Length: 276
Image (cartoon, rainbow, N blue to C red; front, side, top):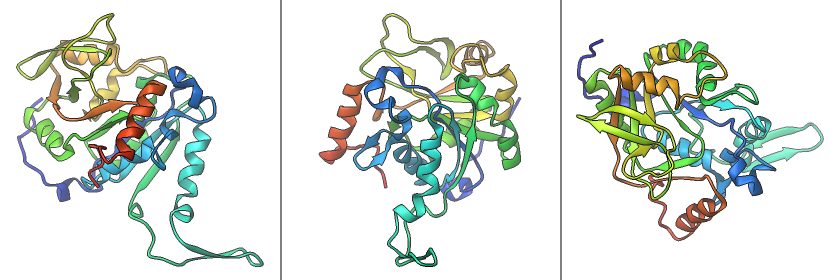
């Protein structure tokens, strides 16, 4: 497959490419918080981490979000259904239940959000697979995807330009964390091997922030498919998994300590992912 190299601007991307965010996991390592809410709803400052992730994409004109819901997904639904009124000054007339907005609103009014129930026990690949009809409806040949528990200051426009330039089916953003995750073996800007969460890990790891051709969904068999297992390994083996190396900030929220770190960075004005 060959795709002509192009250089697109933020304006070119706007409202054309959907962003899928995996929000359905149970977050068992952060049970102190996830007993009461799904992990994407854990707050950094006064907003849930999923909002921070969406704001990053929105800064590049990408405002069509497909949220893969699962564990306690109703809390995410309620948050966004009530978002308009919670973020605006309103006049509520109790007698007739009339609500009037008193201000000009908020900065997220152009967001379009698909709230998709992808199952309680579905794996990451299966959740993406369930988005297939909605991604097809978007009319875009590609979509972006990431996890609902990690923030990053990656330049999304540069990431998209890189994806269009190499003509592969998939681009993974590789990052250098200070802890243990899946390890990538990279040769000539292609992933030659993919090993998820080895016992010890150094170097580049899977940071999410994928750009994927719709054909990647054909590699996902069903709900039990872990995206980080066979689909990514198959793409790597076929030479179709390119890597975008990001040397900047990246941090997931996998543990209580990491939640504290992110909140400390935000509270002290060091939130490098806050580009808005």
